[in-house]
Amino acid sequence: MIIVERLQKVIAQSGIVSRRKAEELIQLGRVKVNGEVVTALGTKVSNEDFIEVDGVPLVREEKIYLLMNKPRGVISSTKDEKQRKTVISILPEEYQKYRLFPVGRLDYDTKGVILLTNDGELMNRLIGPQSNVEKEYLARVDGIINSKSINRLARGIEIDGVKTRPAKVKLESIDRKHKSSLVRIVLTEGRYHQVKKMFLEVGHPVKRLSRVRFGNLTLEGLPEGSVRPLAIHELKQLYALSLK
Ligand code: URA
Image (tube, rainbow, N blue to C red; front, side, top):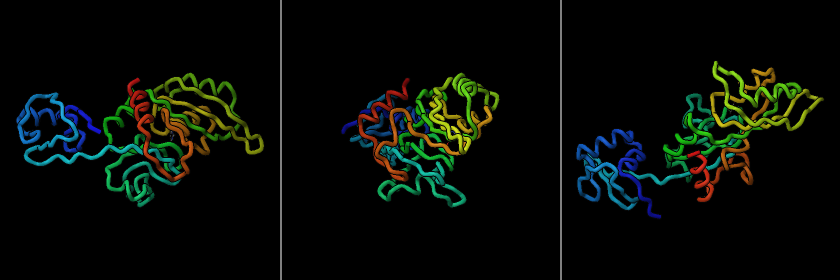
């Protein structure tokens, strides 16, 4: 497949510099396309063009998009100084050669949907402050939650001094014997420990948390601990959601 993109974007995507720095390099005449110096910003290049920066060929990594069903006890970062399992270390060998990153975070003790990619631009669009992509969680919380608390969570609640955006919240079931409730909550934000902090604020600490959906992506057919590449139609949908 031939992909045509702006030269500065392609240079930035290869990870050597930021987009702004890439523009500077182009304007300074330090970039060649197929052996010719190019100084015009916005020049379109395809993945078949040969690009050099200061005479060094640009290594253009294939874009990878993986959906993982993260188990509990795995950290959502690329490395861990305590040598715990990470979402990267549990990947099959065939994906180890890519510089993949998790899109956002799930806590060590949270399981469920997490996306891994080397597409920094999509990643920023999906998790940046402007992102409206829905994240759906199932939370097993302590105590029998009442509708007043459900409504407070849905309207928005102050955590760390900032009110959360309106959320969809639904009580799924109550376990009277163990005095706990199962609540489905759909957020459009991804603040640090957001779900846990929200429930704590209404007096129902989270006992177990799983993310069952990220945008259009669910865990359907994906066993715990495994990954699968996104289908092209899923990727297109995800791009569309990231622009909303
Ligand atoms: N909110 C949390 O508190 N933890 C997660 O892992 C994800 C969302």
